[in-house]
Image (cartoon, rainbow, N blue to C red; front, side, top):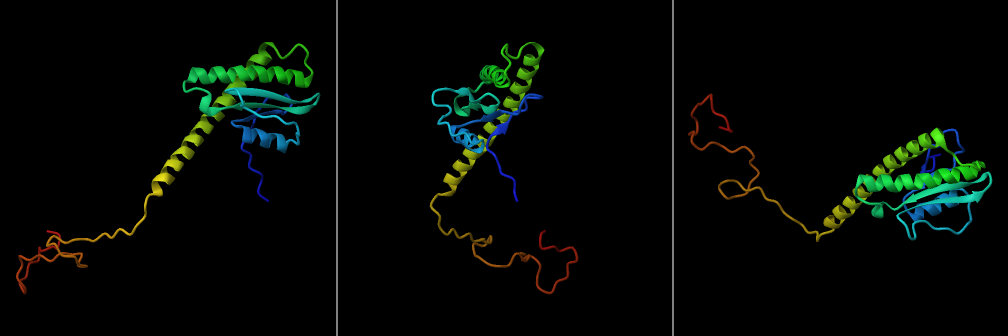
Length: 186
């Protein structure tokens, strides 16, 4: 049996519970909810470029980071700013999830922030490239849908006639004469 293919990503949070997921549109957000048997009616990216959702209570739940690739920005500083902002929220939610009343702080927060930002940026770059390939294929498909028709291609010999003789015969050598250096390509 073939394993199920997911359109979302599981983020590595080290020794913390495995509850962080990443997606890039509402359709995939809904798939995450379905795959985790969450019946709450929620949607992603209705008003923002990026969002972090904590769904559940106590030890049951999930944290979902959602980014809208088409609106996140085109420059690296904008992208890192948005990712770091959402990572900060996700770490706060993780602290709530594990019951850490004072939050996750110090070096632990610093290393976790760096790790999550790197993971999300690599995934973002991969998704951006994947979307660019999809867009390129759509353009190619539209070009390929032009009016189709039979296009005959005829090979025309230099004398203007058509023919199947692929090796031209040299006309300067008279019939019956011997020439050991003669080549049809001379």
